[in-house]
Amino acid sequence: MTEATRRGLIAGIAALIATTAAAKPQKPIPVIFHTDIGGDVDDTWALLFLLRRPELDLKLVVTEGSNAVYRGRLVAKLLTLAGRHDVAIAIGPDGRDDQAAQSAWIGDFKLSDYPKAVTTDGAKAMIDLIMASKTPVTIIGTGPATTTAEALKREPRIVKKARFVGMFGAVRQGYAPGSAPEAEYNVKCDPRALQTVLSAGWPCAITPLDTCGRFILNAADMAAVYASTDPFARAAVANSEAWLPNAPWMAKGFDLKQHSSILFDVVAVAMAYDLGALVMETLPIAVRDDGMTVIDPKGHRIQVATGWRDLDALRKSLVTTLTERPA
Figure 1: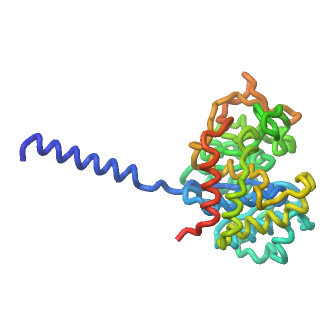
Figure 2: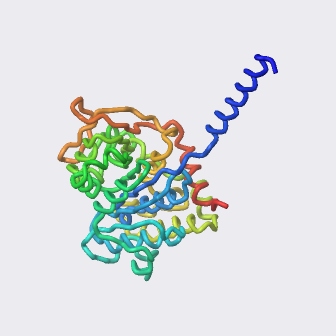
Figure 3: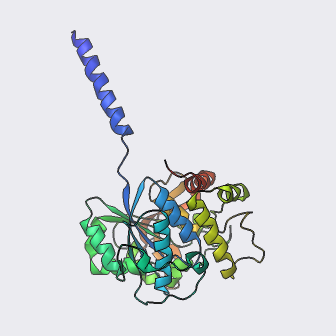
């Protein structure tokens, strides 16, 4: 074998190894879903989307807000639908189980029907999971950041083993396209919690109303979801139909077959594994006590999704994910 042949063979083997390594699928990202599910239906769509994404491995759902048992029952029934009894659930401690927006879909499903124990200390559950994990954990926040902030206060070391992605704020636009920024709900509920989260020193990325507030499925998308027999698609439709009469802020005569409600939280889930559809800027963000998220030189520099590169791609991804059950 000549020297040139030998070198060519070595180069070929190296290229093959490199190609194989590049093609090797990455391990799914361990995820904590921190959510105020059960109010607006977008959290339900987001959880269903998350459960189907091969890039993400849901380990824990932490609910935020009052009426904790209601929220926990909703989560537990969705996880049961997905066959994911391995996922831990932590709910708030208030013990309430009042009728709420999606109660009709939950029916008589009880927390005791879920085989894994449901805890009432979300901060501890987050800390325990993150500190025990061999790989970095992604926290996806789609509700007020209260419990995540509490976890940081109890155990600051979690910043070395986790990152935070969330649906928060309004940087250049408000709820209506082109409108002035305003205090977004998740921030307004607990501004100081988000101040704690953004200043913690871990990697942070948010989708404010500038981007997530524009994420709506169109009539063709909804037709595909309505036509599907996939249990995830059926759950998304049924929960939306149960929720709509209990959402007085929605326009009278709103037709889910023409377009979805705004699915804010789906964007945060997508950001946990792929930023390609979004325009990302690194901006100094300050959270004011009135709930405003403003660009401020003294703020903490985080990644902010300020625009869309390909909104249609995420629409297609959501519809496909919910309507085509994996083999």
